[in-house]
Amino acid sequence: MKGDWLASNTQVTIHIQQLYEEYRSDDTSRRAALEKLLTQQLGLQIKVEMHRYGRNYGTLSHSRKLTIDRQDDQVYRILFDKGMNFLEKTNGAYQITESTYVVVTQQR
Image 1 (tube, rainbow, N blue to C red):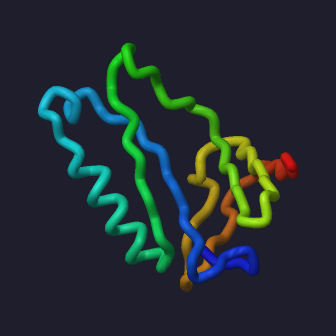
Image 2 (image 1 turned 90 degrees about the vertical axis):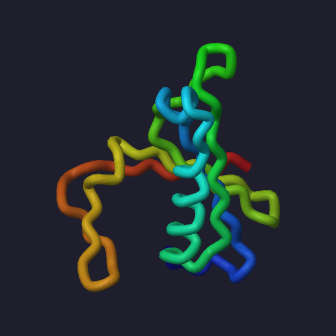
Image 3 (image 1 turned 45 degrees about the vertical axis):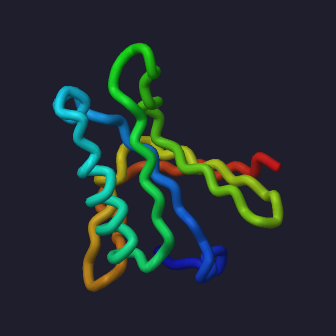
């Protein structure tokens, strides 16, 4: 990840849903592995939060959105037309490989 909005103390939180198999075996190793891999790959402080499986805990929204909360209290929401498979990494940079749209709104 690159951009003027990123600082050395930027923290990114990613939410994932616990799988049924992980729930049955009380396994959270995927969360830890993702956190470690993404921190290494992106060079940022990555926190992966795993939402528990089951109707008692609710489910994670399937929406494709990214919310950026800045330290100066500005909040941006980015809405994606579809998943991130429209991007392909080539020579260390991401390229858009098919038509899609992205909407960026400032929340405050």
